[in-house]
Amino acid sequence: MGRWEPDARERLVRAALDLFGEQGYENTAVAQIAERAGLTKSTFFRHFRDKREVLFGGQDELAEVLTTGIAEAPEGAGPLAAVGAALVAVSAWFTDAQRAYGPQRQAVIAGNDELRERAALKMVGFAVAMTDALKRRGVAELEAAVAAELGVLAFQRGYDAWLEAGGDFGEITRRTLRDVREAASSLEGAE
Amino acid sequence: MGRWEPDARERLVRAALDLFGEQGYENTAVAQIAERAGLTKSTFFRHFRDKREVLFGGQDELAEVLTTGIAEAPEGAGPLAAVGAALVAVSAWFTDAQRAYGPQRQAVIAGNDELRERAALKMVGFAVAMTDALKRRGVAELEAAVAAELGVLAFQRGYDAWLEAGGDFGEITRRTLRDVREAASSLEGAE
Image (tube, rainbow over all chains, first blue to last red; front, top):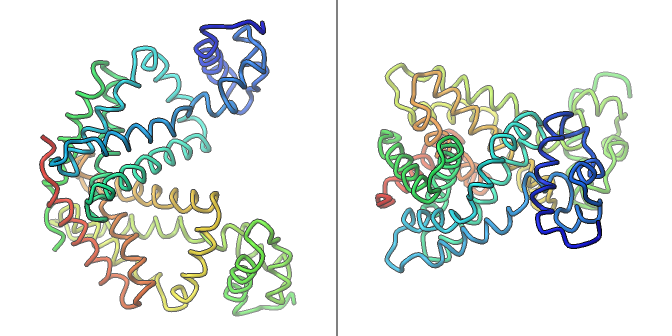
C-alpha cells in the first residue's frame, strides 16, 4: 500500500463522497475514507489536510488563477471584461471528472451548516481576490468591488448551469456574466 | 449582584471590548468579562450566549428588520428602492452608543481570523435575507441577488463612513447605495 498509487486522489474523493452520503459528513473519519479507498491514512494525508479539504481543496489555487486571469487581461479591458477573462482562465479546472462529483459534493455541503458556511466563505475569498486584482489594474476601489461581486454571482450561476447541463465552463460563465450585467443595468436608479 | 442592573449589558460590552483589546479575544474568558464589569457570569449569560455574541449580537434581528423594510417598501418601488428602504429601516440600530464601540469592535475582529470569517458570514446572511425578501416582492431571482449584493456593499461602505464621521445612518447608506449603483452602471458591457 505504500507504493505509488496513480489514482489515489480520485479514489479517496470517491470514497469520501460515498461515505459522507451514506453516514453523514460528521460521522465519517479519515481512517474510514482511506480504508474504503483501499489506501492508508498517510496516503490520505499526502493528498488532503483533512476531510473537509476533500470538498474544498484547490480554493487557494483557484483564487490565484482568478487573480492571474485578471492581471493578464488585455491592457484596455474594462473591469467586467477582466473578470470575464478570469472566469475563462479557471475553466480548465472544471473537467468532466469534477462535474461527475459535483452533485454529490453539493448535496453533502447543503446538508451541513459548517460546510455551507465554508462554501460561502470560499465565494467571499474569490470576491476579495478579484477586487484586489482589479485594484492592481488601476480600477477604482468601488468599481472593483462591484465588478468582483458581479463576477462571483456569475461564477456561482455558471457553476450551477455547468453542473446541470455540462459544456465549456468558460463559455457558460461568459453568458452568466452577461446575464448578471444585464440584471444590474435593469435596476432602477436608487433615487 | 443578583439584583436588576439596568446598565448591565452596556457594562459587559465595555468590559469585553477592553479585555479583548488588552489581552486578545482568544485569551479572554466570560468569567473575566463579568468580573471586570462587576457582574456575575449568570448575568453575562442572560445577555449573551457566549463572548462572540458580544461582537455579533443582534444579527438575526437586523436581518429581520432588513427583511421587513423590503416587504414594507411602497408597492411600486423597484428592487434598489426597496433595498434603500431596508437600509433606512435599520438606521435606528446605529445609535451614538453603538458608534462609540465601533472602532474598538472592528479592531478586535480585524485581529482574529475566525472573527473576520464570522463578520463576512454576517454580510452573506444579510444578502440572503434581502434576496429572499425581494423575491417575495416578485423581483426575478437574478435581479434580486444583484440588488441584494449591491445593498450589502452599500451597507458596508455606509457603516464605515458612519463610524468615521457620524451622522444619520439611513441618510449615509442612501448615499452609498447611490454610489454603488453608479459604479455598477459605469461598468462596461461584458462583451
